[in-house]
Length: 373
Ligand SMILES: *Cc1c(COP(=O)(O)O)cnc(C)c1O
Image (cartoon, rainbow, N blue to C red; front, side, top):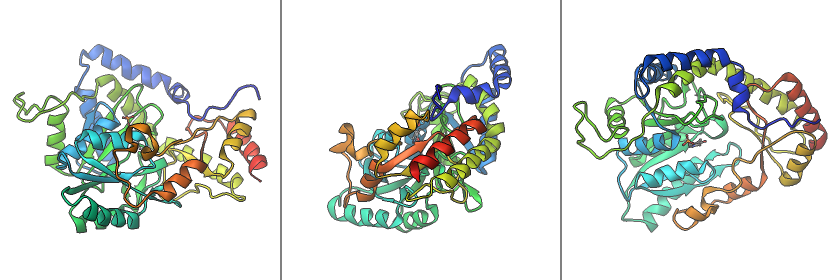
């Protein structure tokens, strides 16, 4: 095969709805409103309604959404915020930018998300080793589109007086039980980076919450700390969402459920071919398949073989956050992160985007069937 099937392709997704996107751009061009206008307000309303929350506040990107959500739920400088090391580095960068100190918790190897027992261990560890610092919040990452165990983590958080901020950057539309992820914690952060399930053509993000005070606080923080009278009564930032991205995201939102269904269909077809001898990332209830990830002890070799047969893969992510130079000496890792470190050496992400053709999926399944049997 001469053409390599890409692991992700924002351009091919946009191409499937080019006319709708062009019309949205045209609408904004003619409106003369370019930042925090009617398109942003409409998208905030529509996405909040889709999730089943009362408030959505558009911001510049997913990292900002996490930072502003943490600040808005009351995280203060020097507080402890618990999350995983098996995530996009942005999760931990946002915690640090909020002024808090990250404490990293190991994952459940079956789900790649925070293990609730390890959260309890990390809380006990920090009480012994960091007695002066206040445990303030958990950032629960729904990685690869799989809803994390928010019921158990939420119960621990309630017991210990912690806020829960959901990192939903990879889980637009995923369900935890009957509720959409993002509608359960004290606040949630979404990214609309171009490869996400709901994608902008640039940077974009949103904080969602059921709490009016939290929403109000994020609205101030995103624009210089302004109150409604345009006076800065708190210190703020510039993290606004623009009209072009909001208009494009409204187009994407109308297709989100169909897109997620197509991703799930692709995943089911991969499932049939990736069983033998592997711990695979099998379909889980409520999941939206941001990524389809297998584990293999010979991951790097497999990656080369797949590429030689025309299939591009990726690794999300090649290093855990605590293994990266900027963070290695600053984050706390409580009792160690053995499952995280094992996973990082074995994970491999197959091509996963809604515009993959049936022929491409067939080819990937054939190649995977041969290499993995
Ligand atoms: C993409 C992502 C982010 C950051 O979003 P940006 O829009 O790139 O700032 C945060 N957390 C996770 C899990 C992500 O995948």
